[in-house]
Length: 204
Image: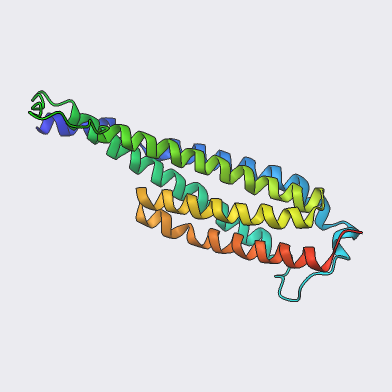
């Protein structure tokens, strides 16, 4: 038993490689979005938009997004690592030498726990990829294309994606899901702000 525990500890999935991967994905998202955001916010067209009085000052946005991007990378990596560790433990238990007893009455076969955890991990990765794509794409819809009504819908879909990401991460690690709640709230606020700007600046 002690040897088995040592072998498991040596094979335990590490957080660092996953953090590097999620960090790289988040950094790419921020860079792609900034290509559209940077020039637009300095343009006269954006400066002269009719914006609501409750819009935060421009300096607040990069500060908030830097914090949120850091949280996204860390929580996603933590949740994926936790799922991988549980999957390896489940695989070790499923490969024990004692053969399972066959049921006397035919029963519906359930998926092994390790396979369920693999599916959850794949689902979390897909949710993260979709979320980051929507995140970067919104900048181009709002700032580059200046399609404010479409950007409002885009932001609403992004908010739903954030909620899904928080739910999936929370099912793997409760703290990771809770840490993503501000991301959901911020994108919900962005939806309201985009909608207000779209109403104040109708297309001519």
